[in-house]
Image (cartoon, rainbow, N blue to C red; front, side, top):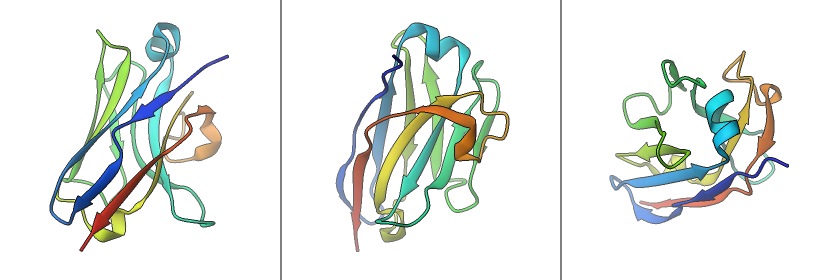
Length: 123
């Protein structure tokens, strides 16, 4: 059973920063792509960012490009999402997911999901 443990969400003012973490097993970390999605209420999950299994390729949605950075820490088997210059429209539950990532922006490419962490940005 693959487990993804997320942390780092919280409440921040607009313009502030947060860093989300997604910890997993060494095997999953080394073999799977990892992505972050976000969801507001009953709306469809929205792609945020993804990183290939090797870490060589990264992908971002247009709405976060230039503000968010996805990275991998090989010593800690953890993927991070550094979020800077946060805006109220970034408010959502953020989920990390792992899988093949052949189509990085599609949630269907990811088999395992974390429990989600709430990010709230006040104006």
